[in-house]
Image (cartoon, rainbow, N blue to C red; front, side):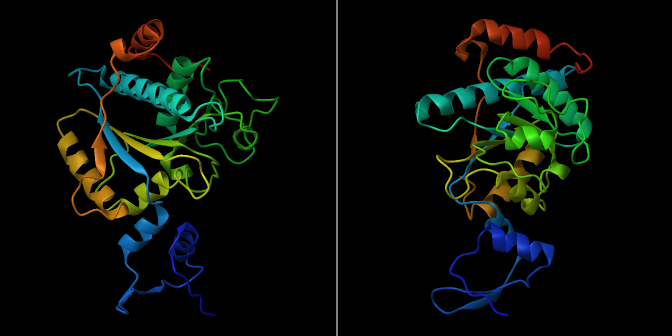
Length: 280
């Protein structure tokens, strides 16, 4: 059986990656034929038109660095979702974000921090190693919009969560509809991880979605962050079909003075820079 198409979308890419179909033969407008390459897979997985950004968390030089990363993420996320809602108006779909972490332990920690920071504005759900149908300690921290359901899939399907926190290893098998923002939180991706980044970034900016998707990578301000940024730039050049490196934009962490709610900003500063166990 032979399939012929004018475009390579996510469906074709995932079918090739899973082995359900053979890698396609590509023919350009001039009739030149070439074989399928890894870069083609990454580009097909990541929708065109996505805005790619990075942010470097403030450096502390001590053990508070992890807390400053959480503070940076919370401020960015709150500011981004407010801005999306403001620009879209009353008829615009509610913003929805996915935060990908390095592992399940980080997902629990990040989910708890965001629940505290975004309480009253956004409902935060966390998936952290639970099997389908199970309810973990952090499966659904905020009850806003829960409608009596507390397992991760039910909450997501019912639209009861606007911020989803997931380890990157568990992100591929979950269907998150209408995602407007993706955050890659200190994932440590290397230059060879373009396909992994494309899978994560491809959660937003899909066909039929209102508005342009935004993907933000939050980097740790350690001595190796320039190496991490160089790797991220190389990845974005692949998925965005860009040879100039200009597709990756820098974004600053909103300052306390820029926060519309100064009191909330102070609450973040106190809560997220205090080292503590995640609340149940």
